Length: 581
Image (cartoon, rainbow, N blue to C red; front, top):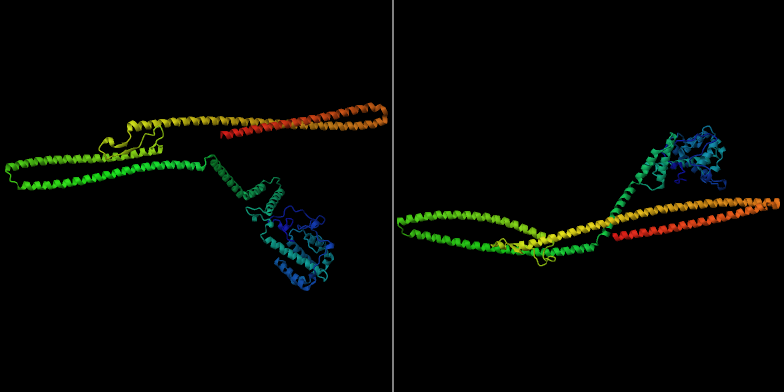
């Protein structure tokens, strides 16, 4: 009895006011929103239902107690004594109160007799035992023979009211409360809820004089847009992802295979490894040469230190010899003069030696700086050779030329500072030749690129011309289809006219035959003329039919040939584009 169906008013929105109700009177009164009659009417007399419990005193006491509790819970003032010895007025008041709880919109008419409203209300609420109730019982509802059945009616209404209240207080989606509809939903009940809310608002606006419901349309569209927002965003993300995957697929499909790229990279790495080993060997030889130079300088420094110690020893010996000699004053003066002269010469020489040492030190610093700059320049030159692929072996015709250079700062011969081929006679002319060759190759590549761009422009122009031809052919196809349709329509019209004329002639022929039978031989000539006209119309109709069939066949053949030609052109265009790609 409580199935969730939209015909049930309990499933209608509980938040909407009652608009547009039709006034009721005694002759045009409608039934309850719960429905009545038809397929949902009470069971017929052939299917009488009985409840033997209503005659049991214990069950009657239970029903009275439940009715009393429910009436007090619904703020209806009553005493248990009233239910024990009930009157017709109290029964009517209790019945209408319980019905108003089950169906608040049920229209009770205070001008009508209660006996006339009682059974229609029960039928509208689909009470299963309506056929077993007699309206005469309402005159004395508390009598022994009527009270059990009427008490069962009140108890049934109490149970129905409890079920309705419980249902309205639940979170069932069939209540059609718009505020409880989630942002994303798929249940048909939610769609019906929004539709019911839309119709209610539109009905209210209609009663206020509106014929166009733009605000309600916008509200409903916004609600469904909000429902589909995540799906639309997800769809856009999937489209973007699909576009990225397609671009990546096209890039992978158009580019070379990864194995070829890795093989090419491996070849470059092997070549770089060989060049790196060559450079490493050169630096190792340079390191060994520098170690040998440092060892030679240390040995020479040790020899010169030993020579200095030896000269100091000889100087001490000579000083002792001078002390023990007997010299005259003149000799002493001469010796002093010579000593002073020698001392001045010695100071002068020491000064010159100091200046020479300063000059040598400054020159050594300058030479060291210039050597470092030369080494940096040589390293830069070596790196350029490595990056340009000019390390030995060099591609022909320079395979016998070694462009590498080494710096030997420790040598005393300026001609041996750079170890390698002659810079002016071999290296510089070779580099100039290589540069000129590269410039020539670059010019050739640029010419080839310009040529390819020109060919690509020509292919693009041809593709545009082919597209224009296809569009023209499509226009011709449309015109031919329209002409065929016109011919078909004209043929059908002429056939209709011919059939009508033939029908008319048949009627005239039948009339003529009838007239001939009545008028005799005088009408025979007219009959023959009508028959002759009838044959002509039949021949004309047959001729028009044949011409129509031939025209349709001709146009169909032309359309087929045109489609084959367009297909051939498109295949040719596709092959041409694939060959160009």
